[in-house]
Image (cartoon, rainbow, N blue to C red):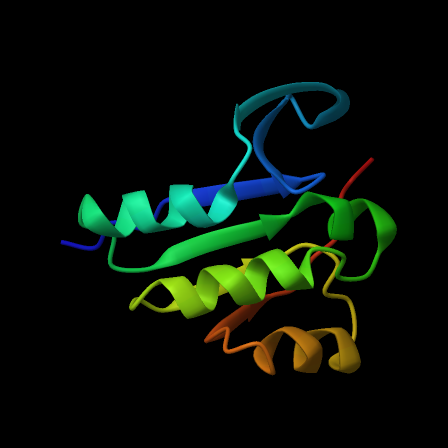
Length: 107
């Protein structure tokens, strides 16, 4: 069984957006690295990170947090959010990310 939790990062914190609305967020934790490590301790086989700041900006924003997570866990990490061209993808792969998810917000 594969367990792949998603960690949405906005302003350096773990959040959930209400129906994709950046103005309506719920903060779950102030430390995404701790959350990532906890998910791995609970059995996660991969982590899915979403750089919500990057999705909004159209380019990666939370690279330091992403790199810290990659270094802190021993499972593959995939990242989405703000990856719209080759250089953006290359920048997150250079952090040690195994998979890059390309896409755009619809709003």
